[in-house]
Length: 324
Image (cartoon, rainbow, N blue to C red; front, top):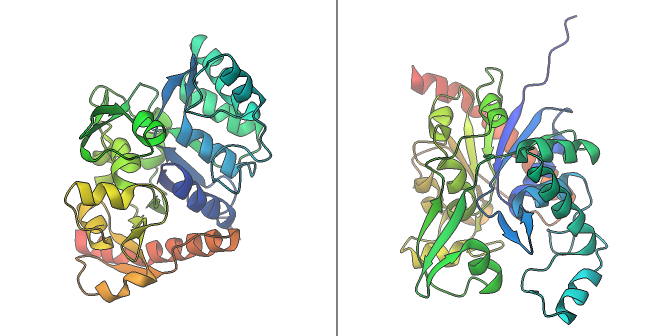
């Protein structure tokens, strides 16, 4: 009997919420069959170090060393560096734990030698025994700029220093038009054996849109033979974590999974929405799976990942039929 190779899945992800579903996919799928393309528009230089928050959250989560209380940073972290920096008058608004510092120091050192962010991330994932491929969306510099009622803010200034308090007027991704999609990301999406593409329940506007803004990304998704499924980050019209609902309100968008479906229109073949949104059934222009999307436990993440995969499999025939 001939052996069949597992069909790969690609996930597009931001930070905490995306990393949770990525972990569920990793634990559900056969080994080596998951690729996670991660937003890097949150990246910035701080204290002389190159920080990649969403990449690191993904790495720490899939390596099972993430802080379970926060969903970011390392488990059992200590804060001696920050305390010493504060005593010297250093900036402490963006906190870097002692163990986490090793990631940023090593990344910065390797970047200075000419290694790409993709190469560095792949090597760190290998050293931490992560079987999935974690790919930054680009090796070029892209930066989210949040236009607010308090002026333009770099993303981390908006998100961490100002705790998302200023009202959002618009978003732009500086450098995106000139950036090149990471080669490994393009290869993963171009794989003819791809089973599905999953857009994780990350903030569509802050985490997924930067990925979609990289030239060629939308073309690859449009030409992808596999079904593309998005998981809504909203539960009953509220964001599970972060400023998604606040930003949608400030951009004059309705805070509902219907709006999430509209946002991804032309890209996705199906949407996964929370069971609390089932009263919206019949209002969508595409297939929708209503299920429990809150991922409080590892079992939740594995169950949701399995349901997303099964849902995507059921969309294959519909999509081929529609295309024909």
